View 1 (cartoon, helix red, strand yellow):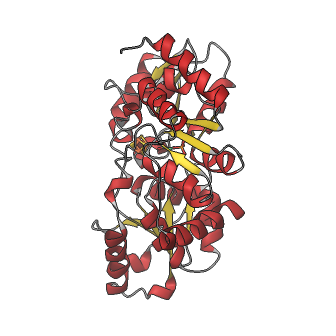
View 2: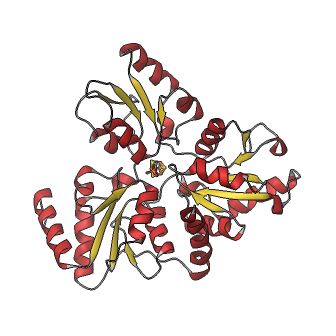
View 3: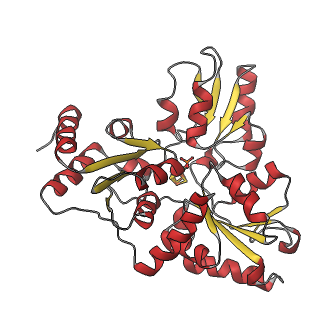
Length: 332
Ligand code: 13P
Ligand code: SF4
């Protein structure tokens, strides 16, 4: 039987009242899914707040690495995802590609003992585990600068995976040398060596889009996510994680125009006036958009029937080392 959205919302609320569940949603989720969440936030806030939550089930509306991070941090929790959709950037690296990147540095005269790996949280648990085993840690878009500053104090080369843009943006902000594996540059000269991964959604924003808005609306502000290309972030007035962008935009005077370079669903619900999407192509994250209200309803129904679906499981060894990498970040 096909339910309307209003009927689905009512059923979801009934299950939420009856079951020991916490519904969690990232800002990029569809509006109607986002509305049903008990916890919302950027990647760092979601990891911390769900770790501290005591419901039996975490129902995570987001992409795979987010639900996996909850399970890694709290293996006793039961984590289910209405859709197990894998972030396209996280899919660009696995443990074998990670090993190849370490070998590349070794071939270029940097010994393994002198490499400190940092993985963006947008990576799967196997990559986080590799990083943890090598003494490294995780970072998110909201704490990357702080994590890299701390890591550099060990006097080692940083291998940053998988997002080349975030790695380069932080290096630029801190006045450090960076390079991308496979592109021009000598790893021995670089402080941060980035893996060549990226987010296809955040690649949609161009310098031409910024020029267009600045010309059309003199005085407009440009606010972007650090997954955008360094040329875009360098030309922005503000760069920040999803939560940081929301706070920045909410504090602007009502008549201040702003063009935002991040995912559509989040920007669209920010502010009714004077907010623009910094691209002529709709920047929708296909995997974040996979989760529907019906998926959420069916997931809760399955829990109620005692047969949960899409439960996240991480093997013991991966869980142990990925947790160490995540906890090193949380401790900072
Ligand atoms: P935040 O940590 O800023 O929420 O970013 C997550 C993400 O996937 C952005 O594309
Ligand atoms: Fe991954 Fe990009 Fe989607 Fe964020 S917007 S979840 S980085 S594909």
